[in-house]
Figure 1 (cartoon, rainbow, N blue to C red):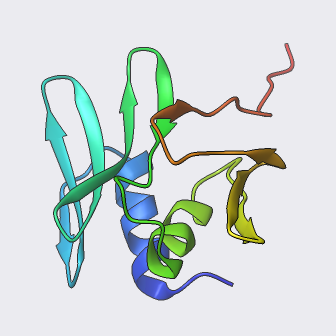
Figure 2 (cartoon, rainbow, N blue to C red; figure 1 turned 135 degrees about the horizontal axis):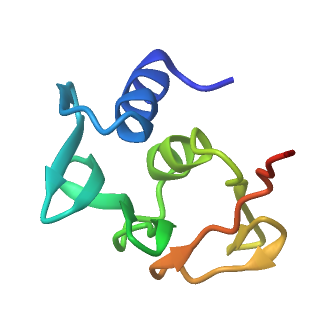
Length: 103
């Protein structure tokens, strides 16, 4: 279960709304929507899709915020971080969506 601040910031992120509360913010800049934790960009939406990064901070809070995003599951096992079941080094990674549309 994600925290209220995570839910509020993710909602603003997906709805392209500016947001600033506690340690989270959403900025709209140069055609991108950016999700920030303590001023560090941890996710973005651009013309290619949605991407994430740990911004160099492999913390429980960073993982909890990123896990609030659609199609993101991050956990650490034996010191190795995993993104959607695959080893991940925290670098900028585009998220493949499971969303589909019916005609």
